[in-house]
Image (cartoon, rainbow, N blue to C red; front, side, top):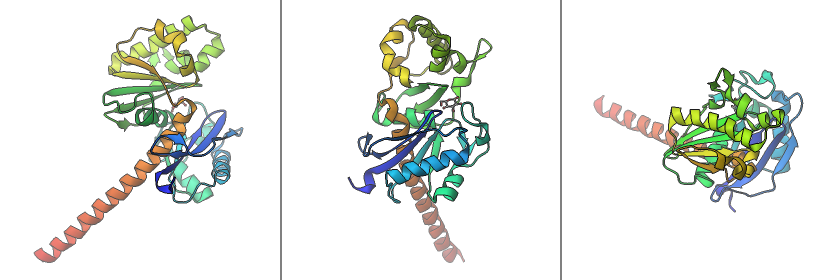
Length: 276
Ligand code: BGC
């Protein structure tokens, strides 16, 4: 495969940091997946160092865009809130740190945005043009909204308050483990969560991602929603693949915006000569 169709994605999680080269045509991995346990404490420097090790191990070519999925909302590269990783991430500018420590340009986005985007481009909701509400159920609940193939980033709808509680505390996969819920009990929790989401957003498709997507048959038949409910397809590939795709899109957009700006500037200076 030529470098042109190749991307690279990193998915930062609470227990593991994972990366792989990605064939952007198919969404398949183009290398092995490397996973290194998340350093503890998971400070920005320790995590960036781990990302560097994965990039080195996979010999990621300089020409390949790097995408990084992060478990918190990011605005202009800056982490604005962090629920399940070291609090020292707050206000960190991740692309700047990656550039400074690893000498690499990178595109960064929220992990659930990456996974949801990946599912719409390559997975469970491939080609879906309606309103997709994608979720990852893990330590927390991550959410992504995609409409007509366009990602509306940075939603944090795992933290909506339902009956006075943070929804992720009741319905993330970690709540099932912590409270030792059986599938019927867990399905009831999910019904409350997705029922509220449905009431607020009326999505056409809801994707359930994270490890529990593999047990979809245990709880989905017990739920009653108007939206089409589907399990994620890319499984543990989603974050990596979505981040890789996003990075490629960013590079393309930057280039095309750059081209538009220079064209506009060029035509302005031509006009300037004429009108002067
Ligand atoms: C964070 C989200 C993240 C999700 C899954 C939540 O606690 O606030 O940003 O997407 O966990 O990692």
